Image (cartoon, rainbow, N blue to C red):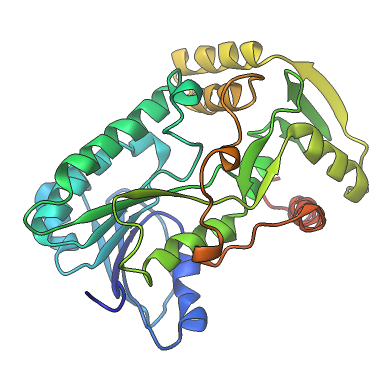
Length: 314
């Protein structure tokens, strides 16, 4: 078996973490290729580890075959609005000899049917996963892996997805606001995904579970009121039913961000599902990710406030 997955093709946004492996794994350099759509305006840094940028039609199997050939591992951090595109990618990757395909999970536990059956995005996740199971293990032996990490903590707070609005210092609390969910720092998610490259004999055919913290909306409010000098935060009581209806109206009006409302309506519903750390085995330690305590959480939230005040997403 190969020592590690050296030739990496990335679809999505963990490039910074991949480049940092020159520090964390200095004796195991990566050769990183990037896949991007023809319409993308993304700009990439100049770095010796970036060997090629493939720009083209991601629905064209010939373009994908060219990009995927001689890759050891493909990491898909694809947009949630393009999840089903991975079915073609998986099929092509399995035919050209890719060893491992990390599918674009990166969210709530899509194997918790009670939690996810009512959300169309999660049905797409399951459809992709079923396709991965079907195409893997063929003559060339490709394997799949998925990373379940809960919510991206910093991003979902700054974008207002969890009901927190930094501009007005108000928060919409859904149902009791005490439903515990898993959240992960973006850096932890990226580190865990990258570490899969250096453990080629593990995680094949699996969803792996990581979490930085297990928290509720009320937990976040309590910390914000301690670290945010512009607090206290005003609480607006809502129900998850109200949030779900808003999401459905937004989708019907063509605003696909309504899907985000639908996801959070399920995540915060009292009595629906539970924090996956209570029933799944977390692999934080094996992937070098610290399971963090309340003191660390305060520091992370303080950093989020700082980012907002510094102008991010303002």
